Image 1: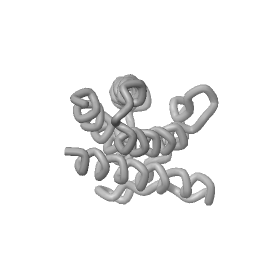
Image 2: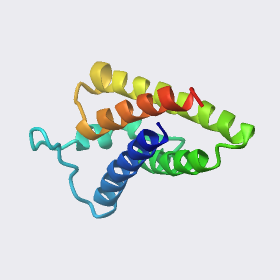
Image 3: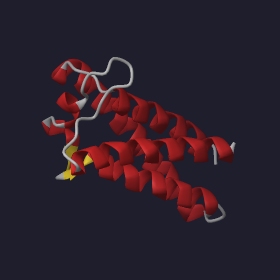
Length: 127
């Protein structure tokens, strides 16, 4: 099962790196399904939390989860990973709701990371 969590975290890193690099290079983030830009969502006022781009927070989160998986012998680390994954999953659901109800535009990459975050939570909560 730990392999699945590692794969999900690596997928999350890949997605957040893609979005981060696109922003740093001033490139559009393209949806692989229809070729349209995801930038409507990624440049909205909801794309930052406490002034930090959500993809940077996600990148740190996925790296932290991988680290926690390798250090899972400590109860404090496991508890921290459970709390972090719960927050990430809940916040992803909130951001998905914002895409639907407020922005009325969708970002394939954002939805993908939301699914990853929910699956990681389901795995991590079982540790």
